Amino acid sequence: MTRPLRAVIHLAALAHNLNIARKLAPHSKLMAVVKADAYGHGLVGAVQGLQAADGFALLTTDQAIHLREMGVDKPLCLLEGFFEPYELTVLAGYGVAAALHSETQLRILESTRFKGPLDVWVKLDTGMHRIGFSPTAVTDVVQRLLVLDNVRLIGFMSHLANADQQGDPATPKQLDQFINACSVYTEPKSLANSAGVVAWPDTHLDWVRPGIMLYGSSPVDAKSAQELGLQPTMDLDSALISIKSLSRGDSVGYGGTWVCPQDMRIGVVAGGYGDGYPRHAPHGTPLLVNGRAAPLVGRVSMDMMTVDLSQHDDAQVGDPVRLWGQGLDIDAIAKKAGTIAYELMCGVTARVPRVYRDHGS
Image (tube, rainbow, N blue to C red; front, side, top):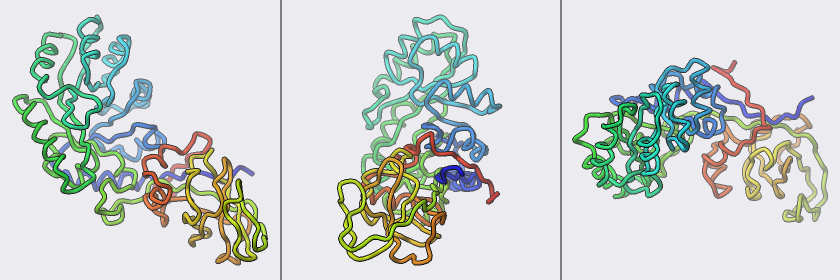
């Protein structure tokens, strides 16, 4: 018998969430963000669920090549661009575009002989202050690109820093900076992330780049995933592997940080921080045992966690336990653990099997 923990990925939910993004930004092309192994969902499987996207944004050359070799012929863009000169020939050969965001990258383009054309999106820093050229540098960057016969400028992009906070003045300022910097150019423009798609329609422009909303998590503070019509795409499911009858005063788990307030039954669940469940999830974080809520007790260990079965007199070894997913909002689990759904999804480790389902099959 195999260990019961698995991540069940719902392809129909991915397609549904993509359609939500499409309806919110009907006049924009949609570049689905599938970096970090599609937010922990598995790149190949997730792309199947997101096949209606107009293109895909990711991070590494090898994953872009993998998509090309599995037959994906839609536009691909590396959001951090290239790192070494040898990548230029590879990216051009596979038709993978790169974000161009630094003087270092620009000098690599100018000093490297390679067979093109290599498509580039010029990335601007309009307030995020991570990567990107200053808006005042756009004219110089474009002029230097135009003299390179093996490089093709295909667009301009930037990234929103505060779009999850509706009404925050930073987003309109970023939009103004972006438009003022590149409005004289006819190439496509891309600014909106998931939060921009949901809350800031003026940022939609030619391409939107939704990420977290595609995976069923709300990208904004003011509305839940359910209120936005998003569906959970990952169920992290396990089972009870042991049940202990304990006495009042017995401690549970490492450090004895939780003590039984009465005689009671405790269930042991296969799953821990070695699988990506947050070690710092506090006592009381909800799980679902046989579809009904039961609180986590004791510290999460590497391979196991413990759950209070006081309200589950009929629970038996082998009964299903949901750690997050349908019926147990991942955003709520993340809030309990003091983190965000992005980290939970991306943190599911490679030892957890991914099982792909479409329309329940």
